[in-house]
Image 1 (tube, protein in one colour):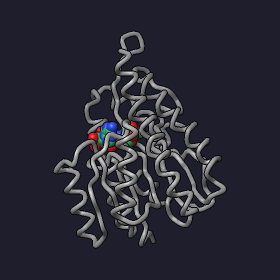
Image 2 (cartoon, helix red, strand yellow):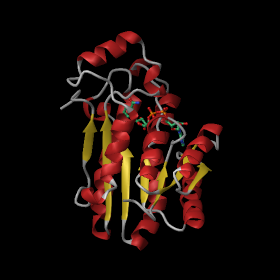
Image 3 (cartoon, protein in one colour):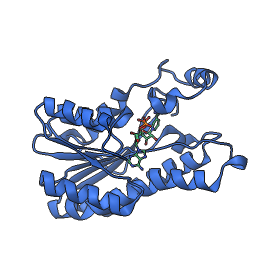
Image 4 (spheres, protein in one colour):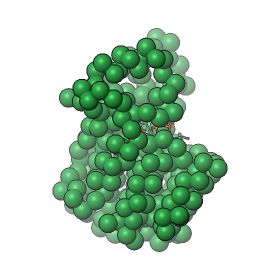
Length: 246
Ligand code: NAD
């Protein structure tokens, strides 16, 4: 389905990003695995992709740094020949109540989650404009839609992602580039593993489907958004949250 297409997935050495990278490879794409460093975990993901008969490479980049993001895109084009799909998945949390949240914790979350996506989109846009095609998928969050106590920085970054997705979709649509966001609910990963049991129990009572999400629930949605079937979908926020927020 995605044969001869090249995808960049940011923050893909573990968690949701890893599963997205593997899913796109299963669908036939060659994949650039990105994370802060070319860690063993990142190399393992690339190996798994190569074992499927696809091309893969690891490019270390801190997406919050514009030069790093530029290098990520340029190295991909140089080594892989093109780039068709960008998934902005890299994200961090620095939770704390508003009154106690430090300026540094506010800034770092905005810098990675929101500015990071801006940096990669900015540098990939000239390539996709030239190709007259491209698919961009940005990772938002259910809390970017509904808010969450203790996550003012994170909610702001994810709500920002939603606004940026819609603006970019309007700018790039006429050149055959779609830009969409996914708003996951509670997904079982290392990011959510650290939450106290009480908090997890409370979340569970709010989920009509009665389970937390799996990384594959998100990866399959990315797979759909980059497939031919989603050619007429742009500027949308797809909630994948078991009904937690409607
Ligand atoms: P995770 O912490 O398991 O993985 C995030 C990855 O991003 C890590 O490999 C990390 O090293 C990488 N990363 C962090 N900063 C980076 C940077 N500056 N540059 C490049 N890579 C960087 O998190 P996850 O649970 O897999 O979440 C993935 C995305 O999904 C995030 O954007 C997160 O906000 C979003 N999300 C997660 C959930 C959930 O329940 N897990 C819910 C909603 C949204």
